[in-house]
Amino acid sequence: MAPPSLTKNSAEVMGVADGKIPFPSTVTLEAGNFLANGHLILTDVPKNIMATPSLLISAGKAKTTVGCFVGFNAAEPMSRHVVPIGRLRNLRFMSIFRFKVWWTTHLVGRNGRDVEHETQMMILDKNDTGRPYVLLLPLLEGQFRASLQPGENDNLDICVESGSTRVLGSSFRSCLYMQAGDDPFGLVREAMKEVRVHLGSFKLLEEKTPPGIVDKFGWCTWDAFYLKVDPRGVWEGVKGLVEGGCPPGMVLIDDGWQSICHDDDPISDQEG
Image 1 (cartoon, rainbow, N blue to C red):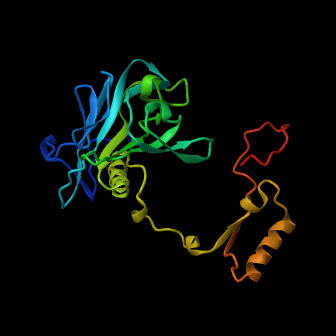
Image 2: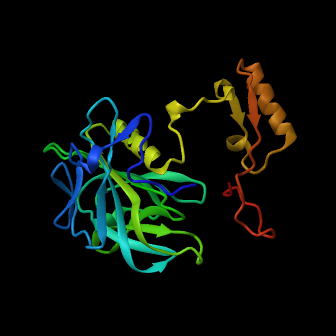
Image 3: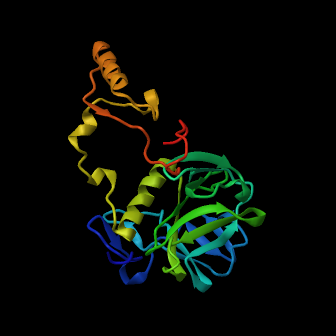
């Protein structure tokens, strides 16, 4: 797959002619601070952090919510970089972070020290004086993945890693996407349109045709049995649903997604 492009076009999204942006980015990096519509969001941004305005606007209608891609330069190539992108202080946020290999959950806080490791998405709250909601979305860049995490002195750090000591990098241009808006739901939708065009590796939900199975009522055995699934229990579960007037169109037998234990370790209901 070709590397992502900061100026890629699509049928629904067009690039800005002559490299000129008719509307300024709502998130800007000025004098060592990140601003959203002129309101301070991150302070003391290190000099190696750079912001590139998104050169994409919707075809057929003007948009004032142009985002920016954030990157950095490191002193030497490494497989893992942890870099501060600015201090986050006394600004409410909501985030989603990965707390297991296969599970994520939400977290709220106000400062950089409140952020969890492996944060996959963050939305900064708006206020009554004009500061909008701000979405921070870590991205894939080449063979590297990114996530947010707490840093020292309320810094918000970005962790960029390849997972292999043989895959090294020192210069990144789009490991984080930032965009601002007054409606958090619309903000996420519009940001995903920009990221879709930038990465070129996925489709939006409205562009997909869901399989017919999504219209069926299904039953998953996990909450009933966890790791201790047995044929009799599955049969009785299905029988109870049928007798109750809710026959399942499909049954998912789930005894855990995967195990991270050694073969000789005792089985625990906490797995899965």
